[in-house]
Amino acid sequence: MTTARGSTRDAIVTAALELFREHGFEGTTMRAVAERAGVSVGNAYYYFSSKDELVQGFYDQLVAEHRAAALPELAGRSDLAERLRLTLNAWITVAEPYRAFAGRFFAVAAQPGNPLSPFSPQSGPARDAAVDLYRDVLEGARVDVDAELGRELPELLWLQHLGVVLFWVHDTSADAARTRLLVDRTVPIVARLVRLSRLPVLRPLGRQVVDVVRLLRGT
Amino acid sequence: MTTARGSTRDAIVTAALELFREHGFEGTTMRAVAERAGVSVGNAYYYFSSKDELVQGFYDQLVAEHRAAALPELAGRSDLAERLRLTLNAWITVAEPYRAFAGRFFAVAAQPGNPLSPFSPQSGPARDAAVDLYRDVLEGARVDVDAELGRELPELLWLQHLGVVLFWVHDTSADAARTRLLVDRTVPIVARLVRLSRLPVLRPLGRQVVDVVRLLRGT
Image (tube, rainbow over all chains, first blue to last red; front, side, top):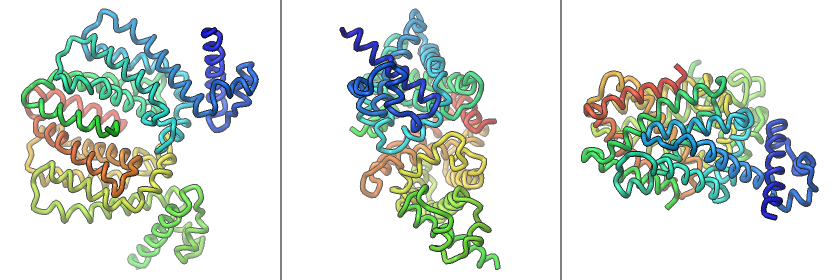
């Protein structure tokens, strides 16, 4: 039963993504999504009360695909930079089919207060799942960090991920080669800063960075 | 003659900003702008061939106002953190009247490839003027940095500025109090990293950061 419900849900999200890619977010209706998925409009609305919720379904699916692609690559690797690089590149690969659509969609999601913003309450589940993946990235790494900074670090790594996504949305290079270059260049900086965060001269920075993350989160 | 032309130009930008605030960017026409400025539509088009160019005029005006507000405050101060804090807060004050409008406008400017993006060729003059201000912020500060990092640092500080603007666009707190808090919290981190960048253990970071800035700039 759960499986059947799950697969109808997935079929609707898949249909929506196809249509978003073909006609853009604004140009796609719930009716067209239902038709493409082979379900009644009423059934589509049973799962998703709006197009916004469909996008949340897409976010959830994307983060699950990202996790499934990244975890096997991380197995047996303990270098933080390597783990970060593999994880970010796994996302670029998984998200590639949506890159052209993401450019146009970005204007919707980037609007302040929009439920599709990565910081909105509605995006909470997808955001938590993404932060959890970075928690796993960190936990499997051979690196010592201060306890307080360590608690915020998964979220900080997710913010780095968002920065990469922001660049990627604007990246028109083949196979997102420029975004992969950005990953290659930023990951060693982040990994080095994490490693150095226990140095007495840098320790106060950790505390200050924690305060910034809390402000960004609104707590 | 230059003054008269300058003042007509300013009057058109001022009228456009009033209308953008009242009716949003999409809801404002060149005809309405010309009427509000008390010039003919043909005259308005003589100065600005499109609404996009009007926004570029606004960017130019905002950066000039920012510079005029910041420089007197910087006089006689040599602490980098203090200079950065005053400069960012001067921008928050100057930009306050446009905050509500900026939220809606952001969706336009944030679109990949849009001429109103801060990274577009069209925004080049306003961007250069903003980077120049951060060059002045840095040059008046009592701080030693590596020559290569020093060349990119004004642009890096401008990227920090953009990060603050991104937060500000989403900030609904009275008098942008939360953005000022973000400034208070990020400025010591940036100033400390700049100061520490000459330490042997951090020196490789400077080189890596330079490479990231070059990638962001597209060179």
